Image (tube, rainbow, N blue to C red; front, side):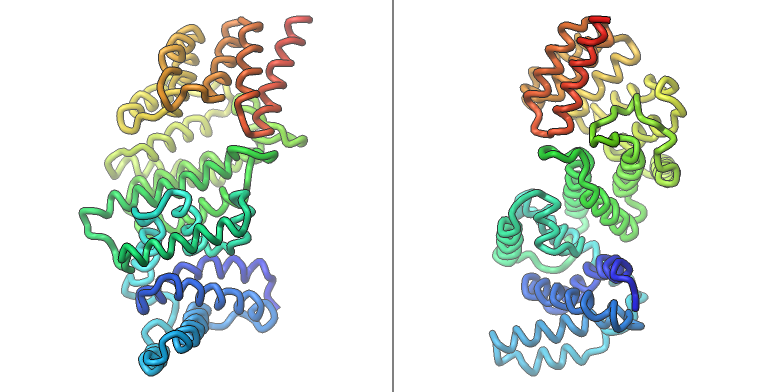
Amino acid sequence: MRPASDVEGLLRVLAPEVLGAMVRRHGDFDVCEDAVQEALLAAATQWPADGIPSNPRGWLVTVASRRRIEVWRNEVARRRREETAALLEPADLGAPDLGDGRAADDSLTLFFLCCHPSLTLVSQVALTLRAVGGLTTAEIARALLVPEATVAQRISRAKQRIRDTGGGFSLPPPAERAERVAAVLHVLYLIFNEGYTASSGRSLVRVELTTEAIRLARQLHAVVPDDGEVAGLLALMLLTDARRPARVGPDGGLIPLAEQDRGLWDRTAIGEGVGLITDALAQVPIGPYQLQAAIAAVHDEAPRAEDTDWREILALYDLLERVAPGPMVTLNRVVALAMVDGPRAGLDRLAAAEAEPGLAGHHRVEAVRGHLLEMAGNAPSAREAYHLAARRTLSVPERQFLESRARRLVVANQS
């Protein structure tokens, strides 16, 4: 008997390969996706007791094909012979490695299909987690903290939208691929960020989302190993997630980077991330995910917080602001500037930046202001900024952290 965890891990890896093979052959994404889900459920039930078959991918394709034929027979009787013949074809029932790159192409195409430009971003996220990640509707609902019925609706509408717009199971033209890869990376980036710092709720981290985002990024990197931005995003995730063991205290409270026990950081993940970003920066044109990974690497390689090379980080943010400007890039650069030129320089730049639409009213503006005012020795104004940031955030751990910062200043001022 195989442990259920072994079976679950294998099924997550095989799910997109099987769905890709099914959709490439039959074309109807929604019917094939339902059939694959039933095959995965059958495997999850049978394999722990009966053992994993010698050709697990072929087993899943066979079961999914049979299920699809059953459905198709009920809906379109005239296709009975055609689908039965397709089931008996040996092409996709062989070993998982087809030896011609097709499995890799199927996985990449499936990523592209789930991030189809006709879909909304929330639908792209849900469909990617379902079709590529192999998560059930219930698992996605728990991960995204929304009702299961809402997730089911989003996935159903997404599949209908793909069908209505004629989204076929084929790689986009070469001229469109860079844009489509960027869309896939954006979805994976959002999944990871929501897991690493939950935007709302009582938990700071949702490990199930960060773990899934890293797994999917690894899968995408295996399919397109020469894409520097794919390597950059995977490196960024690894270098960031490596700090997770030291980021939350025993009480669930947030521990800022400068105060973390670096002995708890995952050195294996850091080594892998540094290797990925070093290779990518040396071989391919630079991109925003690579720059973010390079910044994370500078932080992770510093033995102590005071050893951090803030001048290098500021230079990297200067470049990132030119390559991919954005509100969080601006805010993070303010912090780096303050660490190099002092808190007053950071506060002056923050005052100029906070009117930008993406930063106006954002709780992190006040959190940074509080930090810089504290550095400058202005405890009363720092407390006020921390309290304002705490009122604006929807994350309970962040609110508690900001309030504790304000309380600490009161105690320090009284002593």
